[in-house]
Length: 242
Length: 263
Image (tube, rainbow over all chains, first blue to last red; front, top):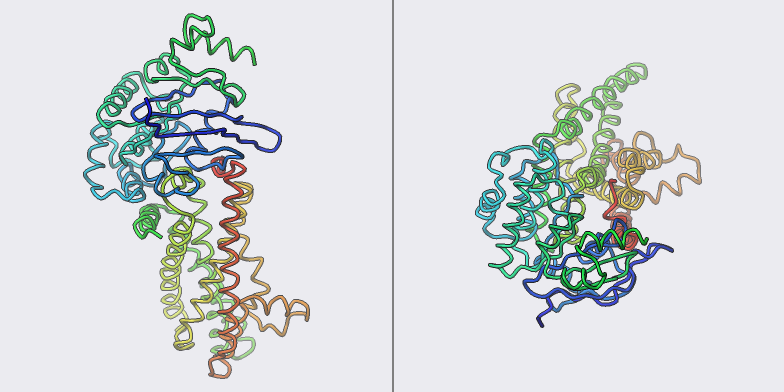
């Protein structure tokens, strides 16, 4: 692997005296899924927010597609997207209206066609005209995922994307993401507290603890390094050391 | 500046207005209530003073013009609150949308709001009180443009504060503009203010508009000096406030407030 699509160097974020992210560096290759693992407060979400340009780093550089995020914000943001359990979309708009607005924000030319495609992919026919305020948590998650995928991003940041989905929909979403990655060359950064899901989805994993990277590698490498049987055992060992 | 992205944001608010009862109240109900209450007060006061027509012209004219300023300010501030309440700010600012485009979209929404509210008020004033705002002549247009600019300036200031301090500051979206009302000389001439307050009022572009309106009605001449001062002050304040908004946005990004606002 020698074609990093995301390059993060010495990234640090301090909020006053508190260091949320402490001098981390990593790369994501084209077509790679990088899992970001760590206990609550480890700095995962802050890292993703910095990569989306929503939080300004205290130190360090972020480059996507060879461009500096700070200097080429618009060009980069047009090619990336995100989904998170912790976001929502305007409640007074229907599912389709929300998708239409986001499609226009990202400058898509074939808006109606793309909406039809993601509605089909995420099985949202029955909620297409439904007001967003009436969606269940799982339906809302599907909508934010559809929003993210609709813009055909080159990098997708997914913060606990299946946290509130039923097993059937979660399975379908993961299958779709893997298929989409294989056919489109999509790169992903993925966080989840479901260790099985992290093993299934990630090519490599970064383990964060108190804002620092404490382990990087494939699931097998990390498990071996910490002398544990499973990734969950590693997680529990590190979390209990805190 | 990308027109497509600006239009996307306007479309989002137009979708919202179609089915938001609260937003419809803002456009139709409250302006109508204002007009009816002030209209009856004006009639009562005028009968006592035996000069009905003059009082109606002054008070209703001032009320309609004040509402232009008020709705322009709300067009900016309420649009931001809508995004905050919907936890949609992350979606917007993680997209290619720029701060400048966001502001232009909010300003456009505020113009649309002003046009609709003004149409409602002007029609109702004519219907209930046979009041014709166009008595002010063509100078009404630059006066209104200036009031919209004052509304934008106060709206951007309000939005900056809400963005910085979050939900605890959201009441400012409705209250901030009234801080400026006493020094805008909406219903009384500037000369009734104490001397030190006159100096402050003079630096307020809205005061020049309302003073100008009274000059037209009393003397029948367009006070170009009022219009000029209002324009110059507005351009200066608006530029400062846009720069301030950018600065606050960057502060919020630095402190991680943008992703937490609304929580």
